[in-house]
Length: 240
Image (cartoon, rainbow, N blue to C red; front, side, top):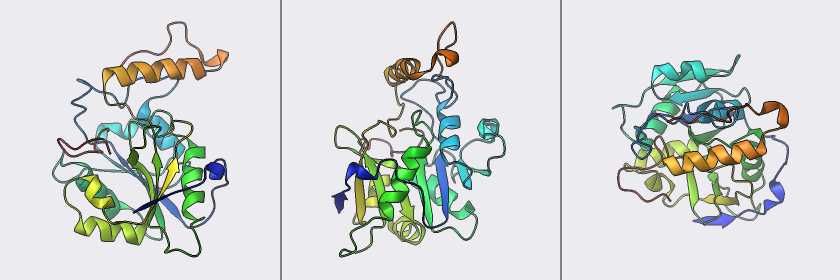
């Protein structure tokens, strides 16, 4: 089930339970036809942007070891591989969950191809999870919903015990993880959860990033092209 959350949580300060993140970067990028996580989009790449948005929280990056170079200086990032490699998003979340450090209460589940995710977006999710209706059952998760009404399975925050229970009963798709869960839907008014799946997505993201850069960040040639999501969907599953 889902309930919309008022957009007034935007910009609320991050408070509450101990927080970590699972970032899924283990997909084949078959719809892109080439690498995408290290493509330049503005002054960042998608994976560096997602890791920076976690703002020092412990992160498990599920993907190939060569992504270690994408971690910001001083970041607390552990890299693991899902079993089997390219096994899909549920396998990736399970691998990430097993590698999280102890003592966490909530965990962000994120795709690695979110070039506009930022600290403020994760603050919104954290504030929304802590602002559930006191007269209703406590929410298990909060997820962004894009401007077409699609819930972004891989731009969400979960209570850790609930995620473990849902994963134990899940099939191969992220949709099955969410099935029956108490989820708060948060409108994504800034497009922070927009991912990059196709060459057209990449071109649009580069154009948006270029338009948002300050004059000091602009390079003479603009952003360079490059190659959800790494693992948001099982084969053949619709986007939401």
